[in-house]
Length: 64
Length: 544
Image (tube, rainbow over all chains, first blue to last red; front, side):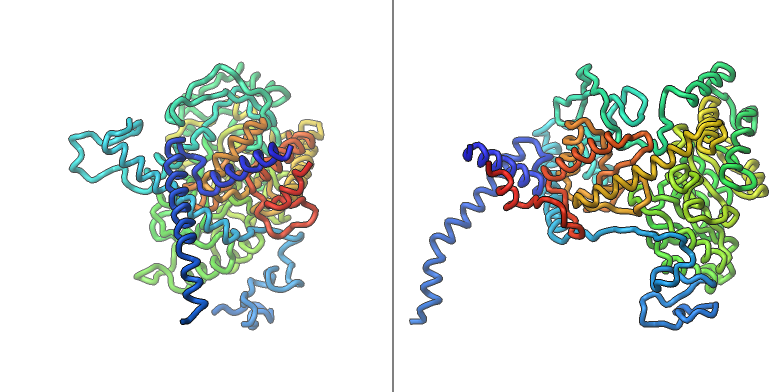
């Protein structure tokens, strides 16, 4: 029951994302292009933060 | 700097933002006791757009514009078939025709959600109607009818305020008898052989209905405005028109050749400033006085649902010796205890308004327009109006429909049907607006106006709202960019006397459901008594 609710909730969240960004009115191939671009950019941000944030933290906290 | 011409103290109060007074009656905005002009409270609200929503709307339009450029590029380089009008190969060195924003918007944004407009109706547009079902194989460029008809769709979009759009009953019977006697076409303009005795009867009836000396009717409401304002105004005259006036008023004002100045919507300070400047400075270079000053306003503004501040305008007009042209297209028959429009609603004297114009399309279930006023004015218009000289006059069954419905509203047909419908309309309006406000939507306009705009803001929600409401068997009108400012798109409901309480409840439940689905409940004023619809309460309410 929880899986079904979770799936329904994720579907509703995806619908909200489509409405807020305005992607809802576009054709499916345009939606795929936008989703791919957004996913790529988010993945790059996560990777960069994973690689560089600990190093920056150490540099800031220890002045030696 | 304006100072009071009468003995009121408020003219000298600089600390309040409104340091002016009109004649002997002060305006109700700045002092609680100064409400002598208004007999009942005038409650209008235009809640401000929430900042986050405005930012997200601009972001949505930005993304759609980028995709619009992408599609234009593909069409230009022939990667994709182009369905639109384009210039021919031989014309490619001429000035481009289709590059401005309006055309860009039409082909890239409007086309994608075009299925919400121009829906073919298969029955009389009463409280419930039948729609022809359409499918589109190529994303709204072409439509095909499936052959199925959607029955009993609740109609929240027709201007059917008193429910006279019906094909049975006394109005329809009288109109068919009239068709049998007079035929359908008039085959002439009004001045030649198009003047029927039915038109004379209707004009006397309209004059009696409005409380003016005389009136004249025309075949088309838009043409009434656009063809009669040029007959009354010319060069050397000044027209002061409201910011949000209808296209017919704007067209008529431009055709007349007079100077046009625009004042902010329903804003009396802006209007007074313009009047003061006009009287003091006169015409632009010669400083001669203006021949005539005409104030153009509407009774109910159909995109905002606001009602004009008529008592203040009449006080201003008397002070500065200007003329007033009141366009009651939506308010005639829909406002006021006796249905006589915005004049009746405020309890004013019809003789104060110089030119009363209105249309028969909305509350009377017919077509055409009228102009009412002093006998001299109407006699002048009979000779000099372009519509009377060149346009075909009103068709006989339409004239009969107006006569029957107007007599019904006035109570002269012996029944109380008219009065019942007026009461039903005002009850429906109050109920509908109150429920929508309680649900948490942003509603614009006056509490008594039957036109209810519900704000949507985001471009994708325009299309989504129209389609979701149709899935729940309710037909609504959604409005977007050229008719409204670009971020303030809305859904416009027109409450009718033909709607029963059950129909309104069904519609309201569907609107609430769609509002939760699309997250449209933006209002921050009234949060008590509603279940939270944000993320966390969604999770809570969905745990079994």
